[in-house]
Amino acid sequence: MAQASSGERPVGRFAMRTIALIVGLIGAVLALVVNILYSLLHVLGQVSGLTQNSGHFFYGLVVVLVGTVGAFLAPILPILAAIMLVLAGIAMFFVVGWWALIVSPFFLVAAALTFSNRRVDIPGAA
Image 1 (cartoon, helix red, strand yellow):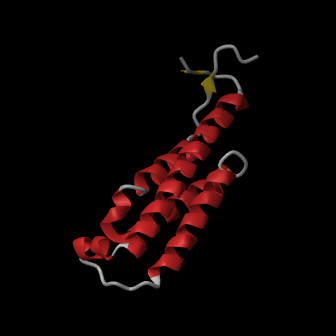
Image 2: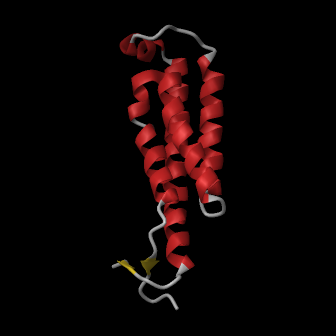
């Protein structure tokens, strides 16, 4: 089990940020799928009560791109990555409405994991 340590161990931070990268990429893939389904199937638009504006698809792709770039930046630039992931999580609500409840938790959890400065001690790591 990972335990908090008092020493400087950047391996634990990198592991948390790598997990954030994986969670963020899963969120980006789900965001792309939800965006495509929302754009192609008019039934989803009628159920959520939004207009049938097809222009939101490109905004959705921009949000997916921001989330993907934020996920890839998680191990390298954690503060910028966390900001990008939070923005992507919030922006999904403007693009696909309440269907963002499927996607946004992934982006927000990845942002929290990225931004956490918790130092962990990994057993077996020297």
